[in-house]
Amino acid sequence: MSPEHSFPLRNGVLHAEDIPLPELADRYGTPLYVYSRAALQTAWQRYERAVAGRSALICFGVKANSNLAVLHEFQRMGAGFDIVSGGELARVLAAGARADRVVFSGVGKQSWEIREAITAGIKCFNVESAAELDRLADIAHEMGVVAPISLRVNPDVDARTHPYISTGLKENKFGVDIHQAPSLYRQALQHASLKIVGVDCHIGSQITDIAPYLDALEKLLTLIDRLIDDGIRLEHLDLGGGLGIRYADETPPEPADLLDPVFLRLAAHGLGHLQVVLEPGRSLVGNAGVLLTRVEYLKRTEARNFAIVDAAMNDLMRPALYEAWHGVVPVEARASTPTETWDVVGPICESGDWLARNRALPLEQGDLLAILSAGAYGFSMSSQYNTRPRAAEVLVDGQDSYLVRPRESTRALFASERIPKR
Ligand SMILES: *Cc1c(COP(=O)(O)O)cnc(C)c1O
Image 1: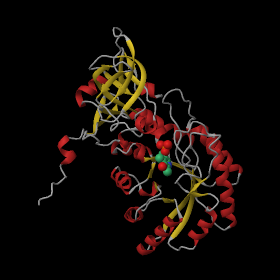
Image 2: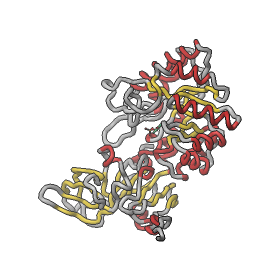
Image 3: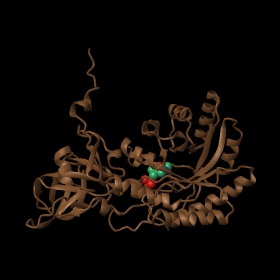
Image 4: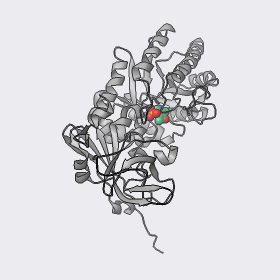
């Protein structure tokens, strides 16, 4: 089932599964994040089918969408989780995750976060520096436990051939230089409080070509051979996340397009026994969500036409942050309104507060718009800038809708603030 099936147009009205979006807007207000349970399941099943019969673990990249209902959905379907903070650890545990299916990535793990992850009993720490390795060893030693580790290596995949990847290059802050990895693994061996279980990389996001993954895999295989020579045997190989989705006209690979060659290559290299771990975020949730917003005002100026909507950069930051492109569609078709070119902008006092530019749309004040592909890095990146309560989130399942996070109240935004008495 493609996302078009989860958000179908019926009788000129956009739906979330079987519910007309105007009904959800009336019931829950706007701006509103709407997720389709069927779309989450479909995205998950693509990965599940691609690893069927193999030793593999798909760890949902929590930062893409960390609502407990979404996490619970993946947990129920058998997912593990890739977390990047103690906060995300607390979330996945609250959603019912099995700690032994949780991997912990991130360049800046604090001591309390490491302690909590050890206490929970996570599957693996993806260590990103020599300093972190030492800190982790010390904490595990103090706690009298052995912590499972993998090194996140930076494979320095060639940027010129693959310009859209951004975290697997030498100049990025992520991971350890793959050439320094063997000595760091030997350093890890010296610590009785560490157990080496894997190797890991995550080369970027919204990747629409499998070539960089396979380049990275080759480099990891060379590293693994070195480690075997040093007497280090791994249990798993983690290729990170990053598979892209269709926002506009991209044709991203399916999970199987990536995983089939990976399994073949591992088997050919005599490493068929290694468990393959993946950390997909965007490709599991991106097209399972839309952001529903209402046009507050239409403003025509000499230079441009602005449709000022009730969602803003605090709700969906990707356009402001990365100049990201999201599809924008009217929720109800209007044959009588002429199409004009609009910039869809929010009410925030920043010129960067736009959601879409130069879109041909037939618009009238009060219309509902759906901002598409908003299930990943949408709500999870939202803020309360301009003292705007964060949007509500709704999960749709067929004809049923569930409010999985109510709209924040204005008072709650500053309820814990204090004016000092002097
Ligand atoms: C963000 C992130 C992911 C998920 O990336 P997607 O592009 O959403 O698939 C996976 N692993 C790590 C380490 C990350 O930082």
